[in-house]
Length: 118
Image (cartoon, rainbow, N blue to C red; front, side, top):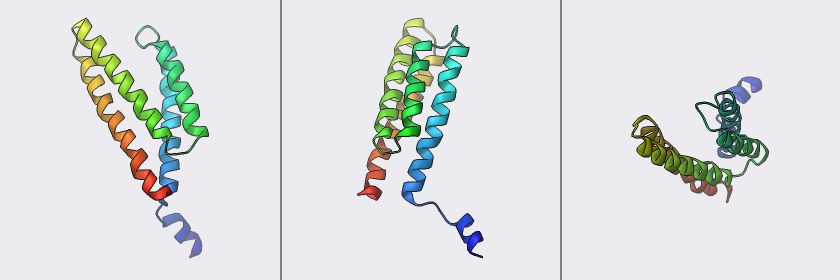
């Protein structure tokens, strides 16, 4: 019975934060590698940035990483909107707007997880 309880119990807020950062870390590493594999379509420089932030997300499981992730999303969102508008396409512009939304959403996690750590 104790084993079942351990499997079915909800994660603590700290465990949820660490799991969220681990997911981000793995996802960012994959996206970083894809930036190199698809260098004709994606920017390899962003691949380096994604890999670095991915490694940091796996190594530093603190709420401040949500500011780093969110800030990077905001920066790349502005970059993609600017590039999309300059090239006259709507795809990168729309994707950039989504990245701005995701960036703000991730930065808000800094405050949310601060309430549970403090």
